[in-house]
Structures are given as C-alpha cells and as structure tokens.
Image (cartoon, rainbow, N blue to C red; front, side):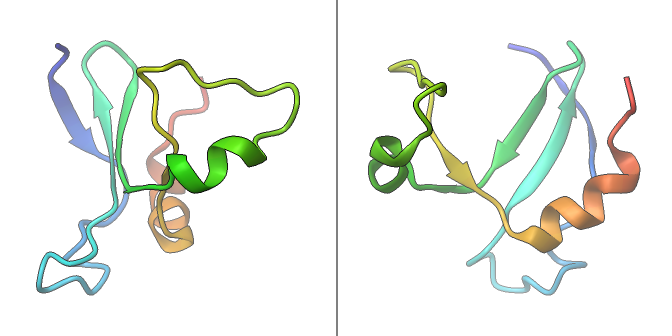
Amino acid sequence: MSQIIRRLGASPRDRGSTNGATCPDIFELADGNFAIIGTDVTDSLDSRLPADAARADYERIVVITRETLVRAKADIPDA
C-alpha cells in the first residue's frame, strides 16, 4: 500500500472539528493517487448513480464536506 505524503487543505481541527466526530480529509499518496476519509453513503447513493457511472464491489461512495474540498483546492495539483 502506498504511503501518505501530505494532507490537502486544512486539517479537521483547523476546520473546527475538535472532538473527532466529523473528520473528512484528503491525502496525496506517494503513488500519485488520493485517499479520502468521508462518510460512507454507498447504500443510499449506489442506485442513484448516473447510467454511465459504475462502482466495483471493492469501491465505496464517500461524501466529504464542501468546505473540505474547497479548502483543499489550492493544494490539488493541476496535472
């Protein structure tokens, strides 16, 4: 498994999570991929995916807050 090399955006604490109850996060991995910590909503959204979208059995649909992604925007590479 690839190593985490950096967080993208502000930490959950910097976004106001002081009790660990809501900690969405985005990490860049050494292999160039990204790891996301979010709320698993696979059961509720799987049947609502667009016709041209698919999910493998080993994949999950996760939700992160808008603030998490917006605050990570500056750290997301263009290429």
